[in-house]
Image (cartoon, rainbow, N blue to C red):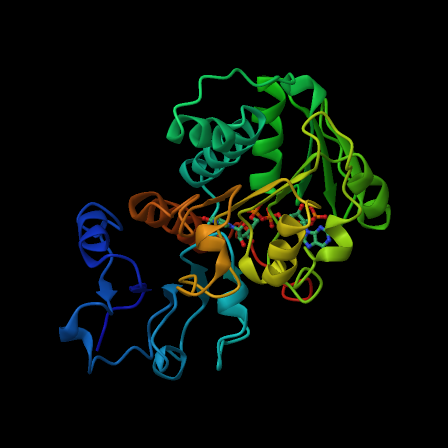
Length: 319
Ligand SMILES: NC(=O)c1ccc[n+]([C@@H]2O[C@H](COP(=O)([O-])OP(=O)(O)OC[C@H]3O[C@@H](n4cnc5c(N)ncnc54)[C@H](OP(=O)(O)O)[C@@H]3O)[C@@H](O)[C@H]2O)c1
């Protein structure tokens, strides 16, 4: 029998990273790392907490006494659809390191499009020495869809660089220096946007949201010319065939994608070789294991002292 207050770790992260982080995490607690073969037959029925990312199919039928489930990432779409997910508080991962990494990625992509990296790379390949005309960041409006933890941090950092930043979210927001729009004002928001940044969770409402109809509503006459689409939320929020057509038809000037409808991106996707496509393999903001375990420890401490858990997912809204 396992002692109470143990923690199950069921993460499809690199094994070495998990083991290294566990060596200095959860002092005084018994940890059951399901990545370790020797845990296969263990009775999990009295364990209170589980930290999961793509967990084993039978986890919830084995761990029947859980009190809290922790997501190994900021997004929870893949957990909310798990068969047998118990009706318990689900806490998502919110952490400075993850937020900072995402903002680095978003700022880098916006700057690469602003400073015409693709065009300069092409010129370089043909040994063409030619200065291109250069708008200032302040002449370009970055519109962020999703003003949560990640969207707000990215907005602040983009604003510091000099971009004009606007944002859109389900409920109204007040963010210094950022004009914000709520759900009903989507078209007004899009009509002012030159670089669209998607930092939305995947829910029923955000599935397929980034489609041709939406791309056509972006400002076509901004300082960059045609608009740019950047997505690091979830791939199923974008309709990839529409992204491809929009690029081919010049409705979009360029895109930066970290997330895809199917991951890994299939080898036959035209996105691999299209001009003006910048891509990373869902690597914009990886969860740091040590930071994840510290966050889980903090929340368990709160829970056991009778304080409310933070960052609990609202299952009705799906994020
Ligand atoms: N690519 C990566 O490496 C990576 C890493 C981490 C996270 N992510 C993705 O980034 C997402 C956002 O993370 P976060 O921590 O910023 O989440 P968050 O704090 O929960 O913020 C989500 C934002 O999206 C808005 N939103 C949700 N549904 C909406 C809808 N139907 N219409 C309009 N706005 C809507 C929310 O509006 P309200 O403010 O009104 O609630 C909120 O502003 C995650 O869910 C995950 O999918 C990706």
